[in-house]
Image 1 (spheres, rainbow, N blue to C red):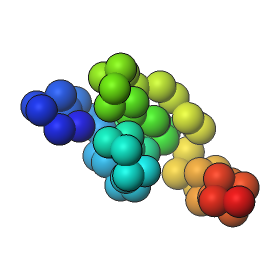
Image 2: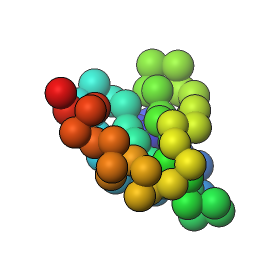
Image 3: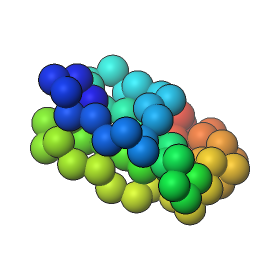
Image 4: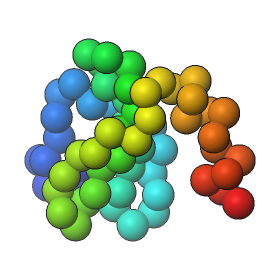
Length: 60
């Protein structure tokens, strides 16, 4: 989300460390993944609650 490539409806909340971020949408509360190298956003899961529940699998 650096270099001015930020959607005002996306709130980044977890940086991966390579420039990528997980973001939550202010429009629908879905969690999205932002790819810094491609400058693209992709839906990751349908709710923040689902993202939290799946977090142990992501960190494994």
